[in-house]
Image (tube, rainbow, N blue to C red; front, side, top):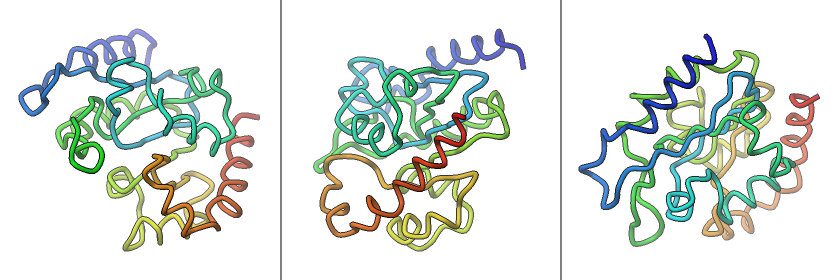
Length: 194
């Protein structure tokens, strides 16, 4: 599709107010897409910091994610290299232990059209339970089991836990993730970028 079509789509996304009545703040969709993005990161939803800045993954979770992937900030924020497509484009609000789940209206409304703008020979990086539920075929019973079986999904898909600082306990309990999974993930990303 033409570049103008992507621009028009992103204009419509930016103007979206479908879930406004469910938010305690003004909607601010945060998404990054380019027509040549060969790495697509599908995560949960923007947090409060990202909502305030309008910059995706502009928080400690993003710092961890970039380290995990072996990407520089310049690579990560280049829409012609990386597309950032959360399950919910707007910050859903805060809950007692973290953020609320992504709004369920968003992915069915926007994802098919946004993803259709991207190359078909891409690497999808699917982060967290919400994204894995929608996008990972043959996923296991739990996120930990799915991530532990990461090699089953390569070379087209990478499955990751959320890089939130709140998940430090999970990382401590699963040291194989940093020693086995991340080197393979970084190698696959390097292949895509080559």
